[in-house]
Length: 268
Image (tube, rainbow, N blue to C red; front, top):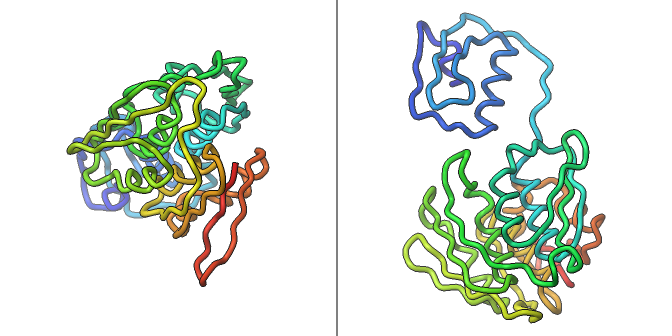
């Protein structure tokens, strides 16, 4: 899309990703003088320009970071206020958390309130199934966080990863915390918990990728005892001051240095 904006002639991109971030990039290029039609659809028609110019542009809120904090509220059975967000970008996450028993409400322009307090949910969150899909389907980048959540929900569940291959490296690490998960091909079968029980126990785990690392941090907040998450450079790649924001929300989480490797220690 960027190359086509300054290429000679007209370029047609078919089967283009429709994620909000792709549309936002198109809008930025348009603000800089590019000619792009079909923004937000799977077909983009781009008329090349000889020159683009500078522009002031505000990028949209990070829906995956927002979804991660929604999962954090759910897994700790807490209540948080999220702003700024674009609620429509979080529709799939909102649907699944509501299915689990959370209460999610609009809290003003560009804001959501997510509540998983026992008095709101009735005590236990219920398991749900999900399948990752390209936007506007359920985002693959929230699969790991939801898997961590589902290990604490009552009942069994199935997650089908249909977007990327080999995106369940976090499963073995969640098992170290006591999670009951079995993987068969692109699907994970999560055992969940019994009513009123605590499923996870703290341990030392290792982040293998960005979203899996975030999921392990969330699981650590829900686990009894102390959880150490190593190799958090993966987390830093996609979250700014992740542990600082969780700390402000009430999490007991500290970034420490051990054996030359930075990793956060998370405790309930």
